[in-house]
Length: 173
Image 1 (cartoon, rainbow, N blue to C red):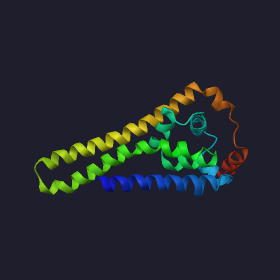
Image 2 (image 1 turned 180 degrees about the horizontal axis):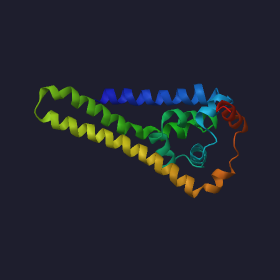
Image 3 (image 1 turned 90 degrees about the vertical axis):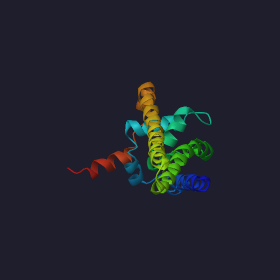
């Protein structure tokens, strides 16, 4: 279980680094990438506000980094040049849902033995689902709180005109 959790955690960190560097930093001037990120939406602007706040870590930063989907979160961090240290430190807590998911998988392997494993497996699956759900809920609440509390800062962020034009052209007549 420890080995599988460690491998899962390392895979998560490597994928986040790859999204940050190979997509976000390398393609940060790509209008297509900015369009895919929906950089002009209030939610993504809220992510920018959260990730660019001073300080190494905050509850909202960690919530977004752990509970938010990797694709927009870490790519956006690369596009807006968030320092890599807080980004990687902020994703460390992902080990909890990974460990619970590994535990759930291990429980499923033991179900065929019967007995207490059937009940334990169901409990492990429930815990894993609850952990992932809690992380996602944390990210949603952090973004919503930022959209409400930091409305002026979000509205002050200028739209990316190139992405806006690209989106308008792509949406058709």
